[in-house]
Length: 357
Image 1 (cartoon, one colour):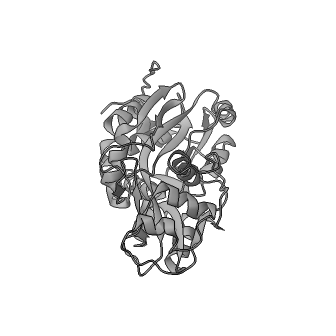
Image 2 (image 1 turned 90 degrees about the vertical axis):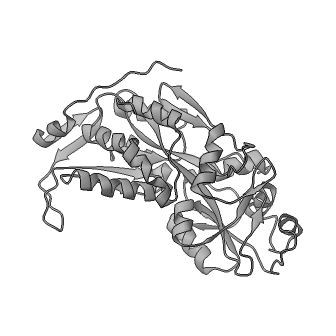
Image 3 (image 1 turned 30 degrees about the horizontal axis):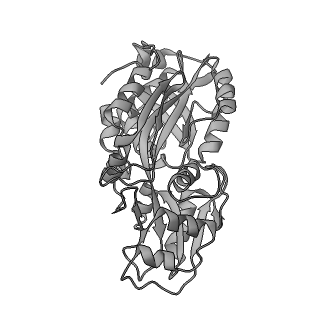
């Protein structure tokens, strides 16, 4: 495990209030501002992040609670996809990025140059991926990885196909067309979903943020939800929080132990018990085994990261991320369809941010 440098940052909130004008630290610009909200309260400082749609529900909850605790500070977040978030961060347009994947070496190098040092990956939340579907006559659908690959590669085109029937013995399946939908553009959720299919279902392509299978391309997680909600016969992959909030039907997925597992924050957390944390020079990254045989483990999960500059970064960024990685920030994630990080991963993140549990 790499040696970890502890960063001391006392008095950050005081420094934020008295800072005036424009300051640039480690490539991050921040401003004092006299902007006022609709209720007339003054915003002294604001920062912006962008990226992963998978973490939007958690980020919205974090931002609201952080604002309640620190009324003078505001954190904005644009959920426009992991690829867009990384590009924004590298360009210096945002203070931090949300990503469902670790940056490849070429992007890591550009991010390091933007920071004038290291750009860190900080795991922050577990985001289960739901396979949502619209079949009114089938309230309890079960799907194996191989069947999922057949559906999303375009090989299985009817709901009463023999592969789906084999996963659902005794269930009367409709004689209807399967209508798969997938994320348009660069999506970390797509990368994680195809990584699962590659590991477990013989997906014919390498995992990628850009979809290479069959189906209709839909922009954003909200778009996937709307299509599945109103198009009978449709099926798509989307973050659990989105599917749960929309009350979509979610398929049980067969894991490597041969059991079909219902998605819940608890079953997603179980899956992370077999994950391995690699604490490298660019922060702790998580290697997840999609073939986990842990009983009750839901197998399609992903870690979402915050990407930020190491060292003398914007104090407000560090204050906010320290809150999200703290006991308070992690405590209510299950209410929004997420799972909190295991303690060993949190310990690594907190060390990088300069505090311990």
